[in-house]
Length: 336
Ligand code: PMV
Image (cartoon, rainbow, N blue to C red):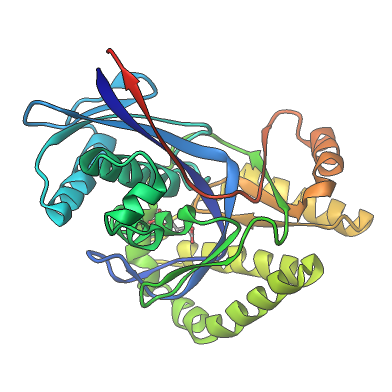
């Protein structure tokens, strides 16, 4: 009988974006960021200890070669974790996403989060979050370890709305019961982006707009927090849009320039803004580091919103998501 340690970690969508790092190696961000945890977009990862001198990785049921870029990212992170725990045994990692990866739905947040949680559980033989806590690994500590693999992963561990402060602290500001928002993701393109956000983060400092952003970001953070605490979408929405466009302006004006939005993203945004304004739809966009567009609305409005979107963009898949509850961990036995 073999023990499998299974973690489900959701993706998150940033309302206040993490863009640019103070220290790349330690993954120290240049600014605080704030996100909403998602529910339907998640990574599920099973970890089990194996004999041998190399980790084994299966992604979407296929074994990855050790030198594949994703396998290297996974094994670098596993090595960081095993050094931290002072445990040397190798793991078999079997992972899959409920959504397309590498295209602006934060698969690195859910992926590195699920990797961290399942690996720690396998190494420490913990079948629940409570077991991990008893061994000195509270959620905040696990989130900080996940951050070393992907910065935004640390925000995926909590329910509802999470703040990651630039000094390292990660806090659940409001849980998912406080406010149920919908994130309706318009899949403009499921293609994996050519330049990873890890690479593009490094260029942030080369944009002439970056210092302007950092100078006023604390003010925006206060406004976003107030809007969430008051559950005021009319106040939150314009801040989300400004934040997404500002991050993409910095990405585009970095040297060299990076383009995550494509013509179809821009066409969709023009249509959406016109439609929203002319029909006074209570819905606002945000964008991650990719061409896909996230539309934020109250959850009860999601069905009506999807019906409007389908009229315009029947050629794009739509992923309906909403405010989620955070991570899950369980253990199962198998004879395989
Ligand atoms: O965690 P990383 O290194 O993949 O950075 C991603 C940052 C954004 O997703 C673009 C913004 C954010 O705050 O999530």
